[in-house]
Image (spheres, rainbow over the protein chains, first blue to last red):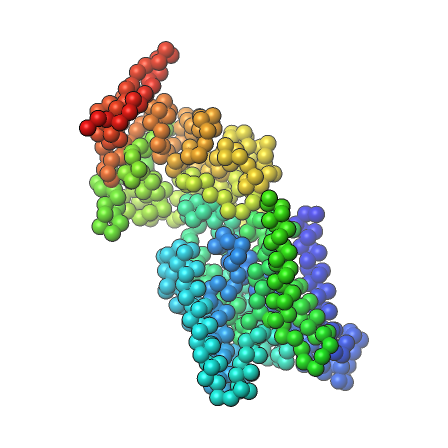
Length: 321
Length: 258
């Protein structure tokens, strides 16, 4: 199968997963009642639609960011969390919940985006001119620092309910989001995605190492800015609306490489589609698990993702041996 | 058509790497940069390729300061085969060679010009046979040829190679040297950092011998490769002689006795 057919197939699957996400839940809502003026219609418009659109966007952002970062660092273990952007945005969100700013309209989103923005600036300052090594170390420092501060905020939470609210939010979920949340996050994600999609040629050139890429006229300094800004905006916005959803950025590029080959530019768009399919499907499945409350998406993703990744690694090692 | 360096200097943490380098490199010539480890060979090559900005002096191409050229314009003129034969992803040989077209590409996809240059580079290096094999599955000798084809595909006027023979068997080393020689004869300026004095003697038109960050000698093989120079720079006792076909050969007897 050539890449064009594969991409067409992924587009179809994305559409199918999106439709599934619109319908699935404790109450199934079939297309004939989407426009209905009754409880089903309201559930569709107020709950299912924003949730499905967010699932689509967040999955695409995470898959694409993972593919770009793995290409940039030439390391298949990289994922959006390596930059510390997710952890910093999460810290911003946790701070908003702790201080009560999250009760204001867009309070949580703004604080999380500020966290992401601050981490972008710090990361650019730390890793200035340092090549990929400074970049990785800078991200690690930020990630650890933000994680520690988040734990600190949880530890000083005034009561168990506040602590539990914070922890719940951190686990990542797409429940109870409004169309307003979607419209707030969308511009940041769109800008981030556009920046990230422009990196293909430079990522390809990096196959030859940093000197090889530079000798081909690639400006690595500018590439680093584009990637930090792109990941920062897109992943920052996704954490701000949904908490931290892991594993998508790590797994999806691997699956896509198995289908499309390893050329970094060739897996960018497919990784975005793959991320959307995985997130939408997982988010539909968590709604179908019986029980009073939903499994958090972040948890479901890790529980499904980890064994799957292990299987992939074992198969890969068998192939390499 | 010349690449020129004037009073080029470089230091890391007050430790001079290169000092007062003056040299001119001509198109149509195979120039070899020689010198012991740490003499500054790779730094000089990186300055010529525009990857490093010299701290003093300039490197210029036909009178234009290389560090002031737009990176893409520079990349079209000067191709670099970096040290270490890095290839990070299992892409096909053909896709790897196509990377050489990066400075010529605009928008998506490859033009007819790109495709012609890619297939010409692959046929010059006899790499068409494994065009669709992943580069990670090639032998060292095959991969070295594919990486050289990548440089040729960019159709640069200048080909700079940093230790292109490392980890290759003699047969493959000679393949690479003959290919570089052919490029020089076709009018390109070829500049290579080599460690092997025997090959330098046999293949180079022009030599630059570096020692402790300075030019110790430069010129023709006869001017540069003398027993006295080799003793001073490398600390080796070496003889030059003409073989039965009249070609100059080098024989290294051992270290110079103190």
